[in-house]
Image 1 (cartoon, helix red, strand yellow):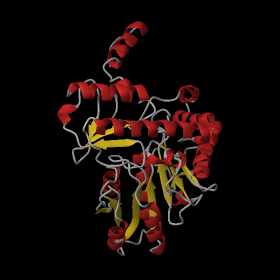
Image 2: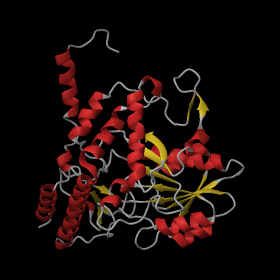
Image 3: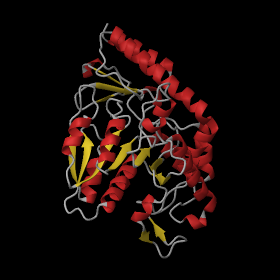
Image 4: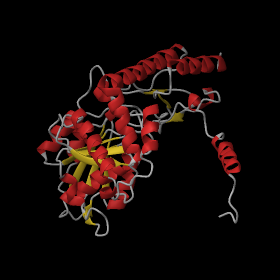
Length: 368
């Protein structure tokens, strides 16, 4: 710590210098996060000092968390859903598996079945919870093989995971088939829809992935991704309203005497921000945002193939992948690469049509 404080001018000059080192979103094509909507920023600023870890002190903010869960319950075909606002998909996934293990506490050597495409947060979850992670191979379309998943279920299996909007290829696993398998085995079934949860419901032909399917137990969704909320904003939604009470621990010195959340102090600001965007845009507004992102994805794929760069997969959501040499990407564009070395681009709301055209022009000229 400095012995003497800095002036406001000096301090924010220093911050401005550091902020200038951050990448410009105009050239970020690899992130599943985006610039927050203006109403999200305004709502966030209104609730910056609130702490949902002690909800009795902030009953208004606590009521917004209930509204956020209600919005997702309605969107995911379960009006009486339970759940809470998390910091994002990692926390939601950890909590889902924590709940699954608690419900089968008698199993001495529990395992969890996940697709090979599962987010790396499941590795963290299994390490923390002492679960063995069984990875199911993917089919030719980069989706979890439901038949092989069924074959891997044994007496020690406490949960199965499916992904709705995979991080690398933007695919939706066969959630309907997996839900039937889970129902037949009376198995906890968690759907990681951190990305796809705010894309799939707004597609012209949405693929079933949520509580409309009998076997689905919990769903993770991240408003700070396609929901354009401030960071961090996630939500774990449960079919049974009070399911998470299984995880309650005593909190004697707070305004509530038990809590099931993973974090203690929890910011209310991103919760308000997430709700602000959903209520401001409504279903029709979100559908328009998603439609624009999907059109940009289609245009990108068509443009790249015109340049002789073939797609690696035909995605279900706004993630495009290509068979491309890493040397073909000119600066200052920032992209990413899958484990199979395919070029990966996410057409988020900040990746406007003009950015797609600029990228196509640059990559075309770079290798003309």
